[in-house]
Structures are given as C-alpha cells and as structure tokens.
Amino acid sequence: MKKRWLECLMVLTMILCLLSGCGTKDTVTEEQTADLPVTFENMMQTWKKDNNNSVTTCWYTDMADQRWLAQKASDFEKEYGIKVELVYYDGAQLFEDINQANQNQSGPDMYIMGNDRLEFAVTGGLVEENSAFDDKFWKDNYPEVSKKAFNYKGKQYGYPIYFDTYCLVYDSKLLENAPASIDDILAFLDEYEDTGSTKAVFRWDVADPYINSMFIAAYADIFGENGDDIKSFSVNGEQEVKAMEYFQSLSEYLWMDKTNISHDTVMNRIKEGTLVLGLCKSDILPVLYEMNNDNKTADGDSAPENETGNNVSEGAENAESAEDAGSTDDAGNNADVESDDAGNDTDYKVAYVPSLTAELSSACYSTTYGAFINPYGNNTAAGNMFALYLAFEDQARQYMGNGKMPVINQKYHFDDKQTILYAQYQNSKPVPKTMLLGEYLMESGNTFDAIWEGANAKEELDKLQGVMEKKMK
Image (cartoon, rainbow, N blue to C red):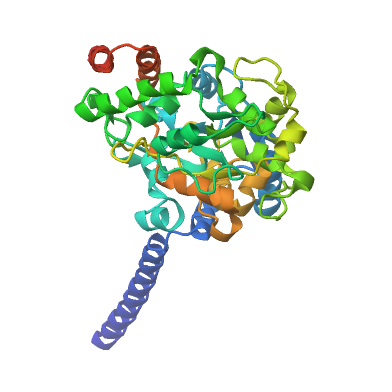
C-alpha cells in the first residue's frame, strides 16, 4: 500500500512538473511577444491579430489627397485583405460631426488633419494616444519637429504623413547664390537694374500672420516650446520689438501694398518669371516643376510623376488654380509679360528662409499633417494599420501621389528642391496646437498690419500681449 502511494505521488509530481513547464513556456512566449522590437511589420501584425472586421473608414478633408488615398487604399486591401472606405469631409465643424457620427455608430476609424487642431481633438476625447511608437522608432524614422508637432501635454498622438512650411524661391539667373538675410536682398535691390522685364524683386503675402510670425518667432514665446501651453505667451520683448521695427522698414523700402499681394499672386509672378525672390508655401513645388520644359527639372532629371504616370503638377490643386488664374500683377490685373516667354529667362531654385539681418534671426513655422485614430470607431485596429501604412509604407511615392512632402526623410529619393525644403521643415517650429491659435492669428494679424502701416512697434506689441493675456485667463 505504501509502495502504491509513493508511485502515485511520483506520478502526480511529474504531472505538476509538466504543467509547470508548460506554464513557464507560455509566460516566456507572452513576454517575448511584448518585448518584440517596435517595427512597422511587428506593429502591423499585432493590429492584424486584433482586427475583427474586413472594413475600416478614413475621413479626409483635402481633395488633393483623393487620388493618392484611393491608390493607397487599393494597395492596402490587396496586402492585408481590409477594405478602406474613404469619406471626403468638407464641413466646417469636423469634431462636432465626428462626435455626431460616433453616436450613430458611423464615425471614422481614423481621420487626417493638421497638428494645429490637436487640442480640439484631445479635449473632445476624439483622438487615441499613439502608444505603439517608442522613442527609438520616432528617432529612426521621423524628424524631431514632427514628434513635437504631435505631442500634447506630454503624450503622443497620430501618425505623421506630410507637411507644409515656407521656403525662399529665387531666380538663379539673377542671383548666383541664395541670400542669407533680407538685408542681402535689399543690397541686391540697390544694385539691380530692371531692363524692361517688369520684374518685382521681393514679395510675400504680407497680410498673412502665419508667415509674418517668422519675424518674431525666433524670440517670442507663443504658447510654449511645444505650442500647447496657453499660459505661456510673450511677444513684446526687446528683440521682438527690434524685429518688428525692421519689418516696418520693409514697408517703405519694398513698396508693397498688403491688400494687393496674396500667396496666389506671388506664385503667379514666379510662374510668369516676373519675380526675383519670393517667400512661398510648400505648394510652390508643383508650379516650379510645371514651369520646366518637357517636364524636366533644372538639373535635367525628369519631374516627379504620380502613380498614373502623369506629371504631379497636373493633379496638384494649387498649381491648377495658379494656371487658371492667368498672368496677374500684384494688384490682380493682367500682366503684360507672357508666362512662356518670361519662364524661359528664369531658373528658379529653392532656398532656406533668410534671417532678417546679420544680428536678427528668423524662424519658420510648419504644419504637420497626419492620421489620427478615433477611439469610438468600429474598427480601430484596422484604423491603426491604415494610418501607419500611410505614414510609413512606400513613402518614396508620397510626393508623386499628392504633390505633398513626406515627413519621413527620403534621402536619395529627394531632388535638390525637395532636399532643401525638407531641411527647412526639420529646422522649423511646429505651429501651435492650442485652441487659442485662431485668436492669436487674428490679433497678431491686426498687429502686423498696424506696424506695417507705420504704427509704433513697441506699443502695438504691448497691445497684442495685453489682449492675448486676457484671452488666456
């Protein structure tokens, strides 16, 4: 009896050991899964396991993205078996409408927007935190400016796709090198002799507070380092005043009427070949490629094409609008110079936004656009998959798809113009994401206008400081 009891005890011990061993194996497997390195493939496989639907929904707000998104959705479905329903949203109250759609269980799983609207999304509870990326993945794949753009109160959101910023465009047939400062531009203006080509020397949309902020952004504190602190605001310091006094001096020197100059007229002047230098948004690139004969870039390489094989400028909305607008002068009237003839006499190149003077710096803002996850979507796992797919997979074709610059550095895939614009983005400041941004742009626009027209710079900046402090309470 004792022997039989010992045999049973030994059998039970063996069974317990086997069970214990199996448990240890399962635990190790789970830990190994949790400790997998953060890569595109690993993230996609993890979400694919959690996916419970064959359809995911994406809202977008820019028609220029339509063809590119359709192609990406088709490729995504072929690779992962998940259909993407693309919904173009053209309303004015994005988050209110997402919230309403969520209540009807028809909200998007993901949507595309700029970082300037992030506080609206977070405070409305309509965006899911991006906990998939670790610091190494961010650093290895995306520039620091994009990470800051998608950071709100210490948390990361969204997947960066493309960006918009400013650059300097100059005619290299008249300027051997890009000017390092606006002072250099003025020096060129002093020596420049117009031989009847009716060229303006230097233009930008002087009524746009977004671009005018470059004059004070190097010194001002506009909602904190990360653009999300409404209690952090200072624009009336000594350096800011000096910068705006310099801004005011340009009004008399350049004879620019802010009511007659817009971003479109600056782009049109470049297209006509009637401008030497201009500050332009990123959407100037399709215009520059379009200007080159036989779809050739200045260095002889073919201009970027989209997935259908067409020159990308044909599908770029802003390039089309510039073409349809025809030749115009600063006042919007028909210009005498024909664009084809003038264009042959120019060779426009892209350069960094210049500093103000040798002593006064400038700083350029940028907007980063990305895919954001709606936590109340019906299939957020697939939403994360498509969002990351847009932000990471085959980004070398990003510009060819919609004429917009990708956030991921394409290195050898970039041509000379794109390389400089990307470097400008890397050194830019993310546009603030606080809900007070709209108030700042409106109030600062009034301030810049007043200073441009001759008002005391110090007094106007003091007024702006006081107005914004009241709004921040």
